[in-house]
Length: 182
Image (cartoon, rainbow, N blue to C red):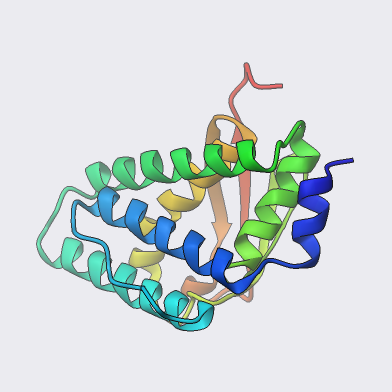
């Protein structure tokens, strides 16, 4: 039994949540090649709202400027991969089941009701960010999701079959594990 993960499933202190949102914001900013937003001295909900506005603005600016979105996607994925590996090490995930639990916990901390199983099937039933992004912004930001999942689960690709931002009632995706991963 993974005791750290079990304890965190019951309660995450607000200051820890804010710290992780700030770290995610810094990594997201690095992926976009911009300065991170100031989220200091904010309660968890306000920090999350600030992060959502920041990411929406970054997406809008990148698209409006005609930026190379593939380069941005790579940067976002790379930064989130490091973040995911850090979380996996902190919570000492040992198998795909632990990883799926950690993913649920990580997403819950940012207002997303994510269901993932050890086979890589992913559903999002509720998403804090759905009203902040349009379909294009959601596709761009999904690079963070793929990187985070690869950092926690091991290398692979996240393939969506439905998104709330495109009108579906929930997001559906599958994390396709790299063949040499256990």
